[in-house]
Image (cartoon, rainbow, N blue to C red; front, side):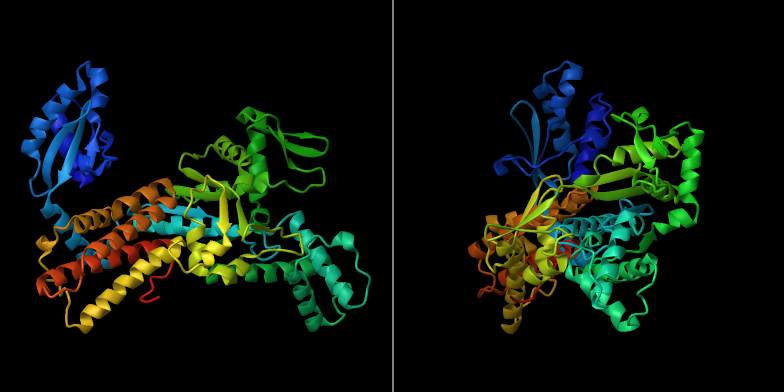
Length: 545
């Protein structure tokens, strides 16, 4: 409907002497429902440049639109206030919208807007130094939902995990495993060499001991590093699979070194006079990019800082030719991103197609008590623990129901409740209730059978529910365009509320067979929209609860 109205408005404005592309026409729902179904302020937007009264422009638009618009789509066009143009949907349009939901089924809400375009989404990318802690869950779930939203709007998505297995943290993992292994041989533990204290370190050491006995006593640190890395990454993969999160590509940071990508970047940056040597280290001239000071990219020990491999990695992604690249990072990466992108641009590569999603940190409370998450502490709240405590559906939903830009407090007690206060339970209960209604109707010998007379849907609660359902594709498109997953959560909650209101006001299975069949069709359409939304955000659509 929005596309149709934008085309008609742009055409009318052309006849009035305004050259306005339809993309510049903004249509929004009025804050007060009585003002109509959609509204545009385009007359007021044009008034200043045209030096005319906005109501004068609005009246000219109104006269032309009343003739141009299809009465089966728009029942009325009105002007309000200083020049708003309000539109009211025709009943025929609402019934057509309901039929479209039933006809398209699992595809309702999908579009081909970005068909043929490719996007690489890189997220999670936690160092394989231990299991994912509960805080990682926010990025895990945001990324998975963003990928799903992009696919629903036509993008071909490559899901990528940057396997960061180089640097001092991996050496710390190796040292921790080695000390725990030596302790099993009866040697005294050097606590200063144990940088990771989680129980998984003991498990890895025990496995090595069971397999090798004391043969690994003199093994080099790389042996323990490799074993620790393999075990930790296997744990990460299992956790992701539990949440139904999958990646297509696992890019190993080692490739940047073994394939000479790091050397290529250093050479290119030197050729641009953007690096220099000082104090036996290599410095990047980040001040030329607007930073407050230059940054070390190779330490005097010869070890690169994280900026250098990040630059090389992004260069590789750009060279692969994706139409869009999306990085999802925690707030602790915010200072690095400008340097990385500026360095890529300095190597004569474009970065305008790179979007970065920054999410704020998350804290966990259980009945008012904070839950710790430090990987280097023995008292760690892992993502597996969170899944065990509240379930996959609550994890997937709670992490995406707030804006990524805001701090998230994850209430464990609320996530465990089986009540309407728990937002994911509230949504799933609506779906299960509809399934129950449909089963009862079938047991009574009733069904909508695809032949329902939708014109029988005239109650205010029925019309309000239809209007909510038809908006689903717009909310999918908005969430995909902005990468803001909370919009879809808000929509689904509003949709469930509209259904509960309809169910309260309108008995579905009645002695009137025709009316029952029609309301069953509305129930089935609601169930479909909820199911499609659940598929995007990764939660189950239960048939009973």
